[in-house]
Image (tube, rainbow, N blue to C red; front, side, top):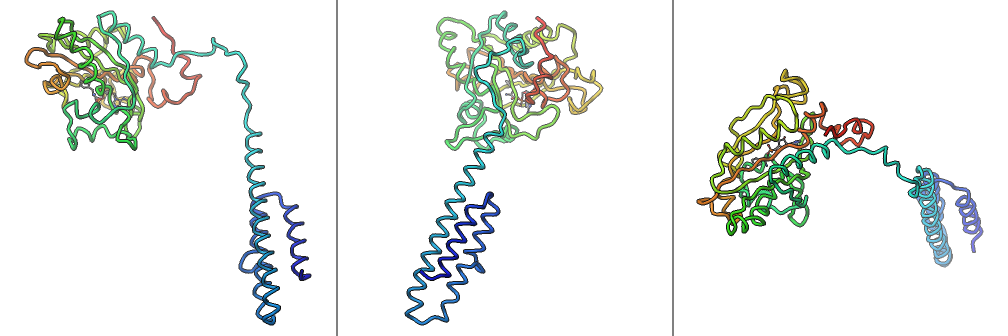
Length: 350
Ligand code: FA5
């Protein structure tokens, strides 16, 4: 082997042994294999050799070039592995066998409010239903009288999966399944449908003090013969007076939702600012808490219930906002913050 090639090979091996980080290694690669590198220079210098010399020398230089590339790749792998190992070792260690300090935990404010609402509605004969977070377009929109391209969809832009399913933007997504589940008992045995279904909802939302992209609602439906707006108002009033245990100002105003007719917005006077206006209520003094209305005939029919014979109401309580009002939490984002110290200050006052 040519002396120059031999010495270059030895020198490269020594340098590779000494190199200890990836940026140094990259410099080394450039100094041998780059445009102005020493191996590239050997190849460039071949133009001065005879044809015969060029053949043998060229083959040797190309062998060295392949050898150098292979060794540099190998060293890159080794250094990357060492880096990952160092990172893992520097991570804090948790002893997963350590006993759990149960006294240190507490229920999340939303869990507390949810359980309280469940108890209130259970005591009035409602069942508590569970429903998935991933739903179909039919469940979340079509079955609720919101066909494709309906403008009401714009208010509830959510997160879509590649298979066309979506993260539910409203607990109303369970209405159709609930009507179908309990409709038979209503029609055959005259047992009214009375169900609530709390759940996590998702929206592609610009967050602020009263809007989150992930929040909780609690839907409720009641269907029977002769259900009217008076029944709806009675249940809403009972729920609010039980939750707050004090007089709070409430207002009912018209609201549009394609799945109810008539539809209402039920707002409560903001308990953070006493109705003066603050970021928690978008400076209006009122907080939209529980839209509701009489279930639209199309929604009843879609659920297999004859709207000529039966009527019903539905409501969609903003559980996260209810927790804010009950516990005086000024910014909704604190509830998803995971700051245990802040969240642990709320206790079940029942
Ligand atoms: C609905 O979601 C309807 N499904 C409610 C409904 C049910 C109407 C049954 C009629 C009959 P809306 O988008 O307004 O409506 O949300 C209902 C409540 O959820 C709001 O009043 C609010 O309290 C809460 N909410 C909505 N968006 C957010 C959000 N981004 N962050 C926190 N809470 C929210």
